[in-house]
Amino acid sequence: MTAETPEIRLKRLKMRSWRRGMKEMDLILGPFSDGRLAELSLQELDLYEAMLDENDQEIYTWISAQTPPPSQFKALIEKISTGISFVE
Image (cartoon, rainbow, N blue to C red; front, top):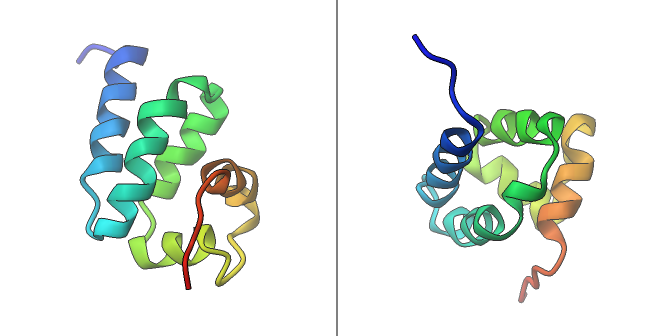
């Protein structure tokens, strides 16, 4: 088995970001992955990938500041949340 190239990893993570189980998460993570995913460090990409394994409803509550994110995801959630406006 060959190692995954950085380009393939970014494409895979973008696909996972746009194909979530919850439309709201598609609309949040999809544009983030298109615009900012390539800017993340390898450590941040590892965290992003781990976050994608979490439940969409949980991730949504973290991004919308309904509940605090786990400490390991706090900085990443802040990056994703920057520029997002939630209407109540």
